[in-house]
Amino acid sequence: MTGSMLTEQTPWEIEADKCRKILSSSIRTDWKLPQDKFPPTDRSNVLDVPKESGLLSQKELDITDSDATGLVKMMGTGEWSAEEVTVAFLKRATIGQQLVS
Image (cartoon, rainbow, N blue to C red; front, side, top):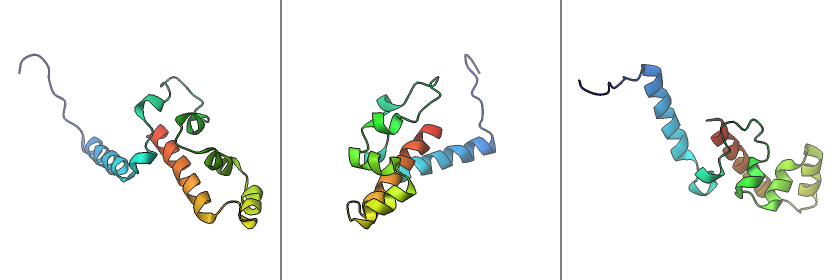
């Protein structure tokens, strides 16, 4: 062999790659964090990434920033629907998952 040597992946690395591909393909395209919205690797606090990403509306940010009492109140008055609350938390969780994977 000339030049560079290829290293073979271990069984766990092959399995991890498969899992990453499955995870990536299971995320809705419109919920994927654009590459230019990923924080620098040396940034330790990523709490503001959901807000900075532009993927969540202001209403979704308000929902996901609310505590349980606030959620119940807003849903009880009909201002927020169960579907809106669920989607908001799913989108935010999806952003978080992409940051830690």
